[in-house]
Length: 247
Image (cartoon, rainbow, N blue to C red; front, top):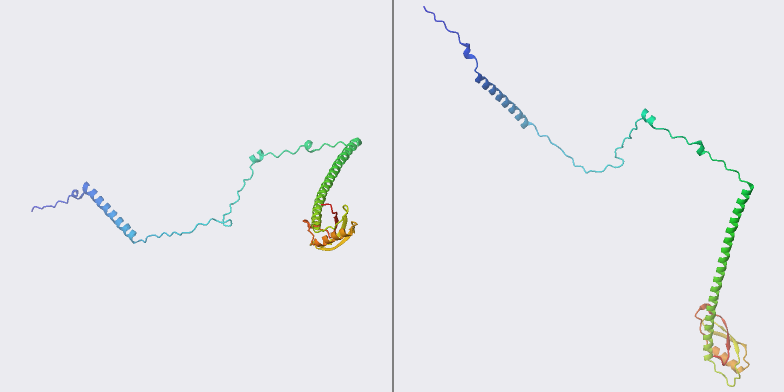
């Protein structure tokens, strides 16, 4: 009987081929990349987006109280090198600070100094007295000039005032006949500030009764008498002189 022995399988047919191994590695890598993509893609879609909040605040400059205090700078302690470099100021020399003693003055020097001081004082006082005397003399001279000007102006105003009074009286006189010469008569007239004549009294007679009576009537007829331009020239009593031949 012929036994037929089966041949063992040839393991050489089960060895993977080089091309198949590269394909198998590539397939495994693609599956891994696909799995990673799916996992992170799902996680990205399911996670909620983060919200960023921004607060808008108006900028205010910090006040003096809010300003941060600047910490004082610490001064490093002096190092031995610095101490050695800084030299203390040299003390003042005794020769400079010591004042030389003043030499006592002699009696002659003191007397001369006092005499000079007295002389300067006398000169100053004399100059002041001279200036005062000159000023007083100038003031007196100015006062005299002003007084003379005032008196001249018053006399002029008074003469003008009396001239106007005599002119009005002369215009009202009716002379009597047979007058010899140019006799003078004087009358005292009392008046009010308004010029109204209160009374007429003969002071000096002309020697002609008719002429005196005519002058008295003319004075009373001239009331009110003219008033002066300056009220200070008014006189309550006037002395009126009259001569027939005078203008």
